[in-house]
Length: 184
Image (tube, rainbow, N blue to C red; front, side):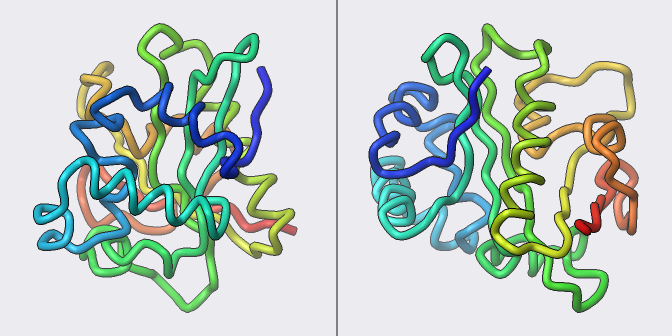
């Protein structure tokens, strides 16, 4: 597996992975970047354009490839890029540490459960470190049962973050812990 930053020359690979509907129902990974009003007012094509504009300016995430085919995505960046994370009573900041946030995973259906998410999480930590981040946070779900529908795991699973050395720093919801990894 190879993992690369999403740059303009890899845009078509993201489109291939997300498909014509833009990953989860036309989201185009803009859910955490927009207010409810902005998100609802924008079409899938609008959101696609918004993400493409971000890609033209900076790297908003990483793509995983298996034999040259895009099979996974992780969205990350400085916390201040994700207004919804900052405004949410569940995911709002616990302190004033300048963290990077890992906010979304998209894994090709045929590759789920094969370690793509774990590899992307590890690569996201390294990428954030290389960009000067002092800490990385994730806001995964912790299912009440052993298994949950994949559609609800787009922010990752708590067990994946624990296995990667993240520590739970807050829990404001039964199923939504906040995890942090301090980078040395």
